[in-house]
Amino acid sequence: MRIGLWIDEEHRTIDEIGAAAKAAEDAGIDRIWFSQRLGWDALTLIAGVAPYTSTIGYAVGVVPVYPRHPLALAAQALSVQALTGNRLTLGVGASHPHMVEGMLGLSMDRPAAYVREYVEALGPLLAGEPTDYVGERLTARGQIRIPGTETPELILAALGPRMLKTAGELTAGTTTSWAGPEVIENFIRPTIDRAATAAGRPEPQVIAGVCVAVTDDPDTTRQWIHDRFGAAGDMPAYRAVLDRGGKAGPEETAVLGDEEAVAKEIQRFKDAGTTEFLVCPVGTDAERERTIRFALDYV
Image (tube, rainbow, N blue to C red):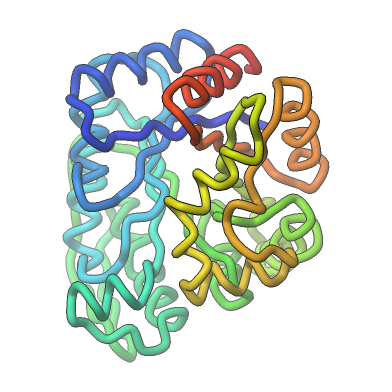
């Protein structure tokens, strides 16, 4: 199982983020992950940070497919692939109704069906191949060619059965949020594996994004997570995965405790079939620093 590290880019300069990326590379982290939120554009950020490093992989967890057309995203992703020396992992996903419908004013009708069409159209474009895709709700005709680029690894953020089926059949795997080891072992791993096997594809990756704090005060840190991320429990896709694990909210899925306790929980994820444990440091500034040091030493 690989160890990945999520780097919080909020309110940080490119030099600060670049220094964090270099430290991760020097420690042997396999790849670092960024989020697509309401600040830095994640793919542009990766292109900007890449010169600070030489070997580490870069990934964006979820680029929402709304409102980006596959041709536009392929052009951006392949540009970043060229600028990073082919070190990009591209994660895509549907996002959530409050963002797609509430913020953008777009329809999110039947998102799993739309995402499948999107991935079907995007795959050949990332390989530099021409496409003439006409789906029920999406058309993509054209070709993106950038010299020196290899096909970037494509990951689909999938938590439900239909999305996991698409991930297994058409991509290299999935990223999860708020899914504990029991959910990965009993639902996510077997569901995505069945789809990949039926499609004749290799075993998919399961990348578990987990809030982690190496802390002497787990209860206070758990409340910190609830205060900042508790609203995720009201989002339909997240609510479904939390219910599968019998969790009331995101804070109950966190890995918290001293170094020994955290290491034991990471082993549980490995035993469940996780291929990459993505450390998302949370808590106070001191706890996040301690957690990052632990992740770098754990490798």
